[in-house]
Length: 249
Image (cartoon, rainbow, N blue to C red; front, side, top):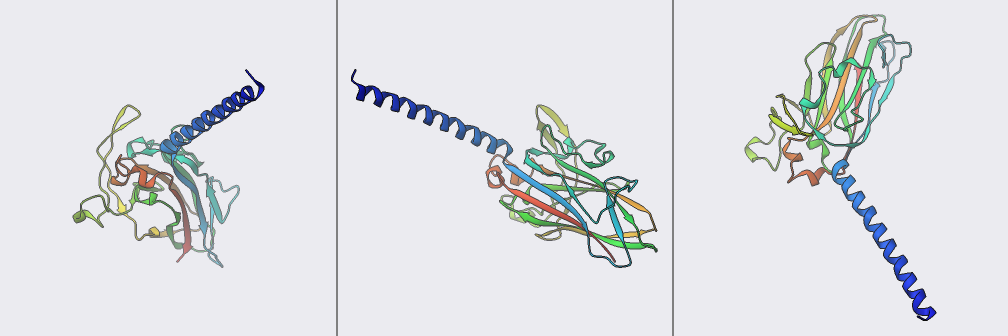
């Protein structure tokens, strides 16, 4: 074998190894995108500019430290889930307590205090700051205030569902096969107020130094028509960023 032919064989072998390595990397990336393509960014909680009437935020009901702005830890990868996956005691852990094992939900618990010298009422509003690939079509946002029943918000129905149900809120979910487990937990939803506003709520008067507790949970509903095998590619790789603001009336 002459040297030229030998060197050509070495080059060809190296090139083959590089191609195999690139193919492996692309396969891994495709798998990761298929499984973990949905991203949910940080969830921001803030208080509007105030003068005499003050609200304050904290991750602890002792308010050892208080803030006018909080930021919940986001999930860079998120898989589809359903209401039955959410733990019953989801509101019993303070601060960020996302599902860091199966990546099925984002959860954040915090406290709001009336630091004003008089009783006040206030608005709470959740807004969609950023969204891509219509991932908001399949998202669920659950708000638990104090000991009240959870309220679950969802975007109104749309294609590919029948036109006669468009602009109606998503209703209950039945049976869902999740990681080999059979889960049934029905629920109804309140539809988003608009394409950029999830909700705007006027809250009851809160007394001086009184505290309201909030838990916000987000998940991608696997039984939504926008998250089926036929439509999942439409939202795969989508991103979402939300902000919850409080303002004194």
